[in-house]
Image 1 (cartoon, protein in one colour):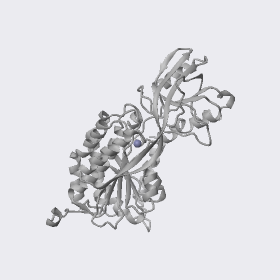
Image 2 (cartoon, rainbow, N blue to C red):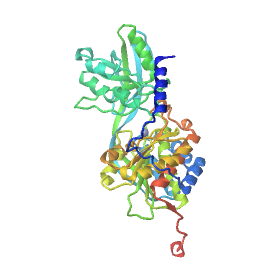
Image 3 (spheres, rainbow, N blue to C red):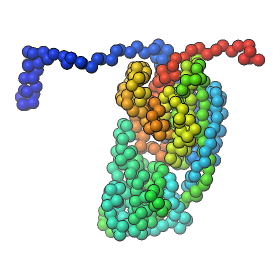
Image 4 (spheres, protein in one colour):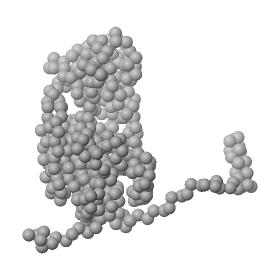
Length: 471
Ligand SMILES: [Zn+2]
């Protein structure tokens, strides 16, 4: 018998012989919670929801890619206003703000020596343009951003930097922060050390020849240089070539045309019975990258938020106003969230929620409603448990556009989706409608509907249309 096990048996014997007295102040078990019948019925009915699929399918089909600041994003706003009005929402409006973006041009990466061949590349957001001639230089490769940071300028000046990483898939997507460093910090460091361009291994977890774009910025006065993402198989190919030990020459062409454009948030409401109460904000972002059709990022998100609000509206009038916000220009730097915050961030909100992590099933609910609202948070946990959703933290909530307002102290809920395959598709040409699983999408809507039914403070049957109203 292993020593550890023997000791355990010994300990058990002691415990049996001498029952330990309970500590004087044992933490009380929280009382059981009964889920409101109306909440449960709304939740279960939402498992047959078609509103979210209808929005996701419509937006990705009739608009497709909708890069912030472009004419396509403007068409998406017009589409959104018509859709939300047709669904019966009130106070449907667009709130515009200016953004600077860039139109993608011709893009290519070519190894000229020692083994001539083409690689698949896409420019990152805010990349400088190479112009039609492209740039040609020797490749200097790094395993990660720290290795780039430690390298002497003399090793980098005049060269094309390549930065690798080892991001792998996780349920909560935790790797995106750390392993996203080649994209977020690599271009600035490479530029400051005199590189003529940078290519990174795509910040993704797939092995398809679909590069992952994404925004980055040149900080601390760094001069913009061309910056691209190789697909993961192409990045691995480049690393194998580099490891052969011969000088590697690459010609990189990343053409882009900067434009000053207009973006905007689309806002719609389900008016509450008591307009003096702070609203519940449900959201996603309307813009997408320009490679796929932005199905999982984030047509599904705006669809989930609006579908849940619509289901409450269909059931009657909530106590609190539900405000649906489809943010613009999330991908370029959370500009929609910042514009909303500038206009309304000082006003209290009952809760903020955002869906921006695909459309796969929700597995955990976090909340940050404050100690005084613990019962409400527990109620949400109990209502979601039948959907297989575990109650996580009572001290945190996150979201992309709503992040700054949550950091300001606004209360929020985090309905966490399974992100295991999210970074296979994120910001690629492969982010298309066929990746959305309707059964999982419905589970999302069911969770959001139940959450919203609780947060909005109880739904009463809508007023019957009166003669006065009909006139
Ligand atoms: Zn997104």
